[in-house]
Image 1 (cartoon, rainbow, N blue to C red):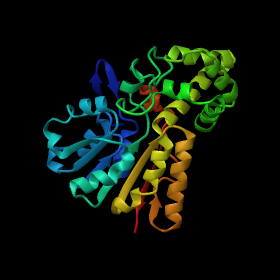
Image 2 (image 1 turned 45 degrees about the vertical axis):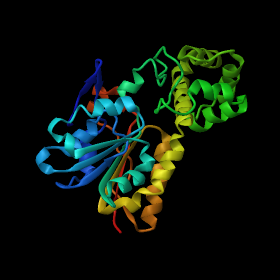
Image 3 (image 1 turned 180 degrees about the horizontal axis):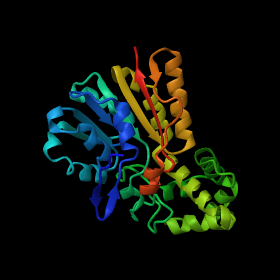
Length: 299
């Protein structure tokens, strides 16, 4: 397993399934690649490889802090990277701005970075002690706290059930709405504590936080837009690699790849999703839920 470690305030960033990503992208020496979720740049730095390859990477991310860190990682290869603060589903607009019609490969890693998970000011993880924000782009949109306050109990229950697949969604939503205030992670944890037995609580916490994050950032809508368009922007034999972290995303990717295969436009390179090796899961526990699917444009 190839590894790249980036540090910011003692937070290590280890790109997930790096060797598999590089293999399935089938990197071309002079290729152009999109990293739609570039984050701190772990995958992108390895996609660029040696400056002598003259590959180019277009990096997209909604997280301004991640892009700031990313720009400092590339050294002599920095001129081969362009970064853009936007969502990955808007990649056609960026390609148009750059005068590029087709690319050799696209990567999406749909997980959260260690930097995001460890930040108390973001509220992504239930282990944190900060406010309930959960926005990838902190300059726009409603926070998780806003969402909870402005949604009805039924709307919250549906969000938790549909996006988190949590069976106790109605009870959790009831307790969320009966609490007078919910500006902080601790408040949400208390609502979940009141709703779940101790031996089920950790999984419920993970599901509820996932559901709220998906809703706040409209993640599934953006993924659907991407899946409906990416094929038209790949060269023939161009590759797409997508790493997802929960079953809803993986089902969407699976269905989209299957549809394009049936239309004879795409060849599925992974019949079943790949998962990280046991060694990688031991080194990077946050990779454990990762599933990688890859495909190649054929016409």
